[in-house]
Amino acid sequence: MKIKSLYYYPVKSLAGVALDELRLDRFGPAGDRRWMLVDGGGRFVTQRKHPALARIQPHLVDGGLFLDIPGQDRIQVDVSDQSRRVSVWRDEIEGVLNATPEASEALSGFLGKRVSLVHMPESVTRPARHENLASVYPVSFADGFPFLVTSQASLDDLNRRMPWDAEMRRFRPNVVVEGAAQPWEEDLWEQVMLGAVPVRLVKPCSRCIMTTVDPDTGERSSDGNPLKTLATFRRTDKGVIFGANGVHLEAGTLRVGDPVTVEKTKESFPTCHC
Image (cartoon, rainbow, N blue to C red):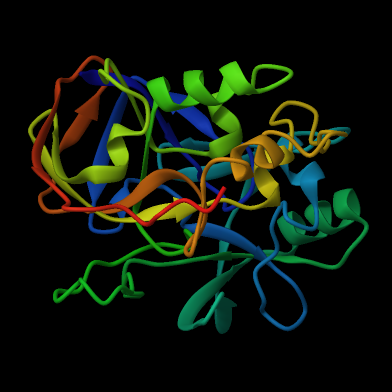
């Protein structure tokens, strides 16, 4: 097996960026979801309610963030010295910095809803949360874990059951693995070597309505797929499953074409209720 593709997402719920190399820092993939949109109460804003966010393309250039918003000129984003408290799911995060007003105003105009853009600085530590994690693994504004690993063989199996082919980008992975002998093998992977980097896969990833959003148009599929089909054979007590969430155990750099080796497997996987 080997790494087929690599992605990171500079701003939570905006478009992703494909890379040939993905450097890792203390948060996981470098630059991944260190920015986020929040509403007036500091609550995170995503494609779950605003699928058009998929149409906004972020760029990290020499550490600086730029946004291509449809119908507007490219915006350079700067960080203010004003800190605040924001929330992602059950986590309340202190010390997050506001962007300067121009970027928030442009994003609010595009969405037709007042939002603010915020940044997680190096000084913030938001730990990944799971009963099997004894150590602290910092995570950015991602839903819960630094990594999402998916398998091309599993997507191919899903698409064989679908009325149309879904792109892997709908599932917003960081690492796509190709060459698995069977689909859904990743269900039982507990620790893998991605190139020279050990990654522990902590839990299966439960999927939501965001998988129905076309990553190019920002529109939801009219038939509810791929989530609708996935739910017919991948529903468990943990939700409708595709891919696995994980943490990296060492720093390093991942590259497309790097070998993928399974070092440890789980004894069982949550039973599917189909």
